[in-house]
Amino acid sequence: MSGLIGKKIGMTSLFDENGKNIPCTVIEAGPCVVTQVRTNEVDGYEALQLGFDDKNEKHSTKAALGHFKKAGTVAKKKVVEFKDFATEQKLGDLIDVSIFEEGEFVDVQGVSKGKGFQGVVKRHGFGGVGQATHGQHNRLRAPGSVGASSYPSRVFKGMRMAGRTGGENVKVQNLRVLKVVADKNLLVIKGCVPGHNNSYVIIQK
Image (cartoon, rainbow, N blue to C red):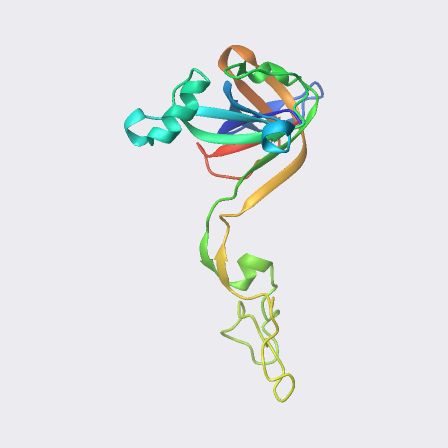
């Protein structure tokens, strides 16, 4: 599966040929350097390791610097492996946004925005106690009952409760590529992708 590492720039909107306003996300996709070529003989599987976004040398370990030196490049902040890459690549090759075409569909993976500790209404979509009936005047967003009394005398595992929300790996599938700006390494993708602005995303086709 071919792909690139990118950085979410932000959201905007475009008008299509029918005059409809389409929300879209702008992603800086690549260029990525092939930092390692995994093979069946050595690693037991085949994959391409890509590096993206230059990292300051003083913030890198000597092991990392030696690893990237083999590919003839500087240390990278983000490294991701892609299995079953569509084209044959060699160590040190540069892969840019030109591997994508306008109109095709891609999957985008990223870490969702962290929202901190949230209640059940925001975290799980509970409706609250509802309609303020039966004397409920100050518990509209409460979780309600979480377990029986005498049996089983405990709360079942997996019960939906308040807790830390967001900050999870999320993949959004089948997003259409609206525009490819090759000279600026930009992808304009229909809809929204996970993560805050300037966060790393993985684009797979």
